Every structure is written in C-alpha cells, then in structure tokens.
Image 1: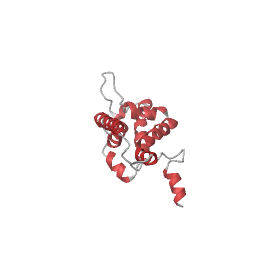
Image 2: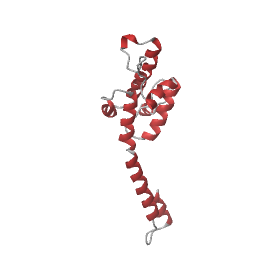
Image 3: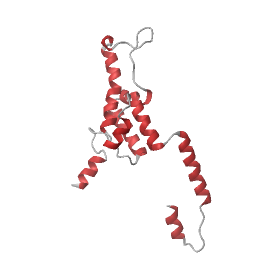
Image 4: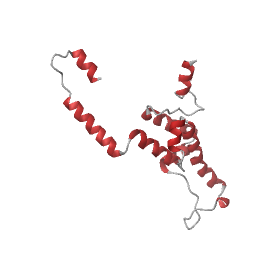
Length: 151
C-alpha cells in the first residue's frame, strides 16, 4: 500500500500534477512546467508572464461583461494555472500561496520560499565555494573517511 502511495505522490499520472510536499523544489518546478505546457503552452505563459488582462482601446481594463470569448479564453489560462498549482500542493504549502491572486504570484512565493532571493542564492553559492576551497584531509584520516565527509 505504501509503495502505491509513493508512486502516486511522485506524480506518476499524466492527469494529476506532481505533488509538492516542500522537498525537492528544483525537481518539482521542472516537472510542473512540463506538466502545464503539456496541457497548453499558454497555461505556462500565464505563470511566466503573468495573467492576460483584457483591455479596451484606451488600454484600460475592460469590465467583465464586455469580454469577448477570446478574452475569456486567454484570462482562463491564469485560472487553470492557479488550479494546477494549488492542486499540486500539500496543505502546508497551499497556505503559503492561498492569498495570491495570480499564478505568477503563486509561483514566485514558492520560488522565493524554497530557493531564496537572488541575494540568498549568491550568498549560499559563495559559502559553498568557500567550504570547498577550505576542504582538507585531516591528520590521521583515511581516504575513505575523506570521501565520506566530502559527500
């Protein structure tokens, strides 16, 4: 029973988005992009570029009752993306994005939460480089011990 849940939780279905539990964000985000693009490339565009907002000739947002069928379809891509993202999250992860109004906002909240800002990533990279450069074999340590400590 546990094995079948694990397979299902890992997104083994083409009909259900891959589940994100808060771990392995980099893996999940790639799988989610592929999942959304496989449904409709415009759904992923709503995440990457933001939602389509129907406007009139003056570049002001149109009232909803004036939207054309094409406007509704384009706007619907953001709604679909929000549904896909929220359906892929555990309760704890869902609460992080529950106040977001667009799929792009949801994606950004998850990205910053699990990857950090560019400054955080740069600092982490510099720390890892420094740790690598300072890595040395300790007195009396065997090669096997060094390898274990390195990995």
